[in-house]
Image 1 (cartoon, rainbow, N blue to C red):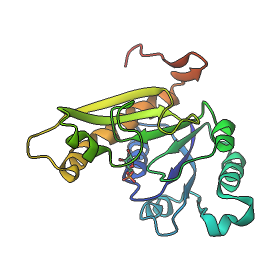
Image 2: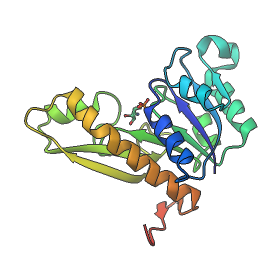
Image 3: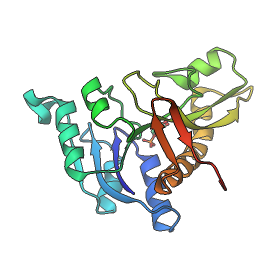
Image 4: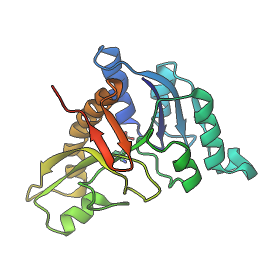
Length: 202
Ligand code: GRF
């Protein structure tokens, strides 16, 4: 599966996918990593793994606009799937439409709860007994596209946002690996009716 990954930060999810590929668990061909931040630590993973990478920020995109440059860059690499992995920019409808059905996002909440930012703190403030992470198709509604899969963890009495995030992170990695496996096996699709997961023999 040809995959492009968009990041803004640490890229721990990217790293875990690279490890899964290197261990022979995932048949992924990383065609490009794009960051909107030149100093995103996650770019080091792309460099180390010899994956083509680009920084596309406001300045480099200029008058053409970031979404257009991101879209054209992605299109040139012809990915089967575009993964937004901690990419902290909201995409415009034109870019979303260009890749609809082929673009997924990771979000650290049990969607449809807590779209947007500060999901851990919001779950704690609400007194939730569980929290989690989702992988979903990207549509023009922010964090609102159909959910493919989720993972849940219990909230502990002494949790703060940092501890909750730290406990969720490895589970998020595993969730992402499972979802990517479904895509490599062509077992997940989205159409007008929503997501279809062929979950035979998961
Ligand atoms: C993940 O928690 C993801 O759900 C959120 O951003 C984080 C990315 O982490 N959207 P990393 O950059 O992969 O370490």
